[in-house]
Amino acid sequence: MLVEGYRQEFWLPPNPRAKHRRCYAHLDGDIAEVLPYLNTVLGGYQYYRNPPRLALKFQARLITLYPQMIAINMVDDEAEAEKILLWLKREINNTWKNRSAIKPSFEVSPKPRVLDILKLLPKDNCQECGLPTCLVFAVQVSEGARLYNDCPKLDPLSRSKLKECLNPCPPTA
Ligand code: SF4
Image (cartoon, rainbow, N blue to C red; front, top):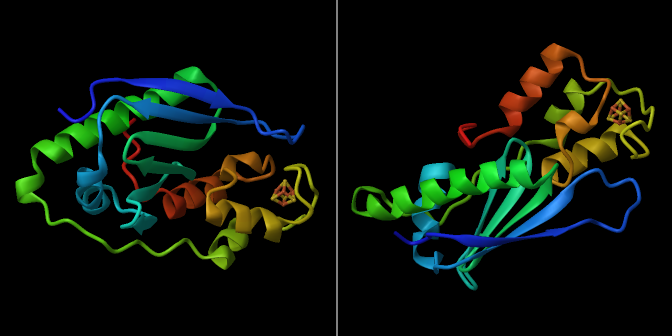
């Protein structure tokens, strides 16, 4: 088992409009060697060899795995962070255990296109999300800096389509 435990640390961005915290999990093991295998299993968003790190999208959040740390850019609370971390711990350890049957990947998945996201937004530019326009919101969602759910004006169909477009990882945390 590569990871048995971790220590969570939370950080609240200084922006007074920020609704989410960042979570850093300091790991008790080194996961550098499993990262290319995880890239195959989970479909990485960005992968770097040196220093090794893998970025993933999970329910539109950006999660970065470093050799001894996991950073989650947006969580509502400790319970949500714990749910995501337990899922990652399971994926890390299972992938390491089964690595002989997995072809490591050093490639990355394409980013969701800003225009594809924008098409599903109301395009009201109402600023209720705290951003000046829907386009800026779409750019930030594409980069993983905002959640699609942060737009309160999304209708259920667009919400569901956005979820599908932004969620290449299995939603099984
Ligand atoms: S809240 Fe939604 S509709 Fe309003 S500006 Fe933000 S993304 Fe656009």
